[in-house]
Amino acid sequence: MPKSNAADSRAPGKVGARPRVVTTKTVMTMKNTGEKIAMLTAYDYLVAKILDQVGIDIILVGDSLANVVQGHETTLPVTVDDMIYHAKAVKRAVKNALIVVDMPFMSYQTSVDDAVRNCGRVMKEVGVGAVKLEGGAYIADIVKHLVKIGIPVMGHLGLTPQSINKFGTYEVRAQDKTEADELLVDAKVLAEAGVFSIVLEKIPSELAQEVTESIKVPTIGIGAGPHCDGQVLVVYDMLGMTEEFKPRFVRRYAELASSMREAFRKYMHDVKGEQFPTDKESY
Ligand code: KIV
Image 1 (cartoon, rainbow, N blue to C red):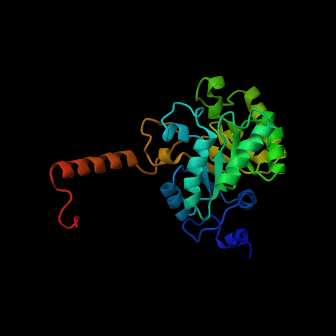
Image 2: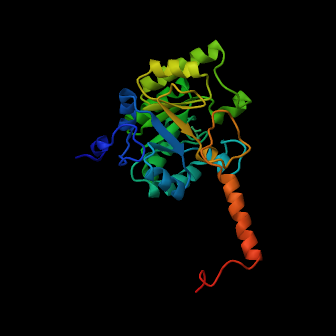
Image 3: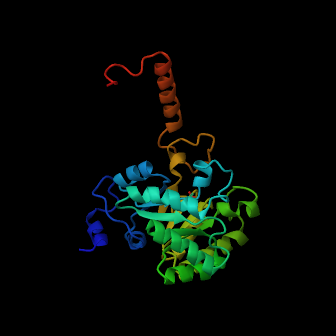
């Protein structure tokens, strides 16, 4: 039995059931079966391992690593080599989830040749399932070519952080009719070009619903309301590690920053008070 079929034995939507191998095809099928797609980011081996253990559908090696791992203000400085380095660590941990790698700013927008070279490097050197590209109809030819040569592409519309210098703000996008109409067209063109799914970031819920109902490929929302076919969050946001970042679309499932501070303080206290290590913790 092919690996991807073994996956079908997991009952849809059952968290904690036997994990399945997720492919781009699985993701597209989920739109038809109505099973919501759960996606989170990871940038390292351990987080990816835990995500895979619980059966997450998609792990995104997001270029948000520029912010949350490297400490940059925007995602623009991250390089293809950075993405490959982190994606390789994630790949070593993952048995079942579909791994998608974000392509950095200016690694694909410049030409079809550049896109093939850089996306090809990611696919070949890391061995992941797909890449993600930000942008609308203007990258359709690039998407078409990548898909044709065997590189699955996830699209990304709405608030596309690589365009922050054009937008000037991280506010909700497509609130006026002109931008909303344009986004709807972009989604249709991308779907036509062959993307297997599209991330919709920070757009009105109603518009996300219209896009979701208008295209055959799944939408995965972040700040785009409940009508998308799936949801994605940056893992450190939902774990409560990025404390100052408090947009309303982030639900915190843990408060790791405060737990970590508490643990670090206890450790310092124990070391300075000569309470660590004890005999039992020594050889
Ligand atoms: O880079 C990233 O983490 C992303 C998600 C926010 C979708 O693109």
